Image (cartoon, rainbow, N blue to C red; front, top):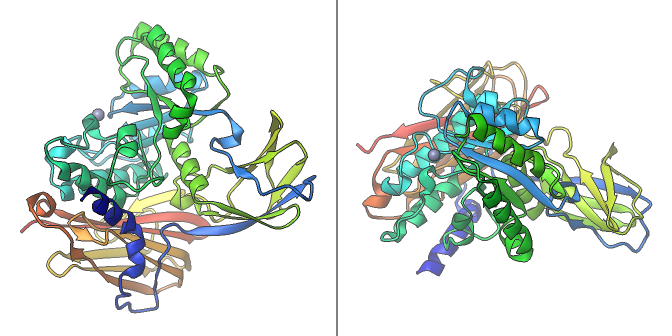
Length: 480
Ligand SMILES: [Zn+2]
């Protein structure tokens, strides 16, 4: 039973391919790609002719470990923790709720993100006990929160912390299945709960990344205990690395006064405690997903073709790191752009940046009553009929410019399959109206699956006036 269900989840992404191409008014392409990729050519100087293709390094820049932090809940003291982190060279991610609409500049999410020194992650809209909700409501709590946080920060959100750490119920196995089905449709691909990722029969392998949590103490900082925990991670390195190459501090940003200073002391020592890549969880998630989905081929000596995911599929522009044996690589360029090169311990690490135009979005909005304020002239609508399973999306381009490389991702609530439908379109010209229609069908029975409102989310990624943008459009259909 369990195995079968795992398989069903695994083909969730692939099932986009198999669904029939529904009527669409003007030549949209239903895309089968779970992840959009592109190619680059890397040219190496000083590479000997016999060198094999490089490995993909598990940590950016060939560092030994990634180091990050995780702080939960929308607590203003998080700003003090953030300052302490930056004073001591530490970075990380704040997991926030989104109960009320907020003004972007004044929001905690925007202040915590700053210029990208830190990032935000999802923690659900209203901090409920997710196992107590029907699967459709879990989906809403997770995806609507991600949309709100992306709009507040103009940056992708790819990492999740479940409120109360709740994602299962030992007496009701359908809860883990439902929460996992909801998670897989939301666009998150990192979770701070390692057990959700490593001990979850409903989650396909290598799709979602996680980390190794060490706890300095939420209210009172216990440095001795903290250093014992982090030593344990390092001393059981092979087992630790099966779970993740990222160590992170957590959980709550409650430390004030002397305790905050003690936390600062821990951070100060941690900065250079090992060969760390100091990163946000967003960057680590993007780096890991990128590494797992990149192919490197060698068509000629000294030249490599890299097929890698577009950064908007990952959530961050973090470069890819290639690891060459030996010290013969002196310099490298990718499509003519220089790459940074670092040599250490008889290895050479080449950091390959994304191409211009393949980066993460820098402006993100959600349509309100059909209108996108941050993209004047873009109008979008989404409808869903739970009785027939019919979905339709329409975009009107009144921006005065051509919108290019459009990719539409529609996520349906867990009661329906397929969970994700995608369409791509090379160009949507000025004054053009682009419509697509799709169909999902009721996949599961029982009140756990059928209860709750039906929330459908459409994410449009595109390039407009040379800038990568993202526009969400959602619709909610109540039970009755
Ligand atoms: Zn919480």
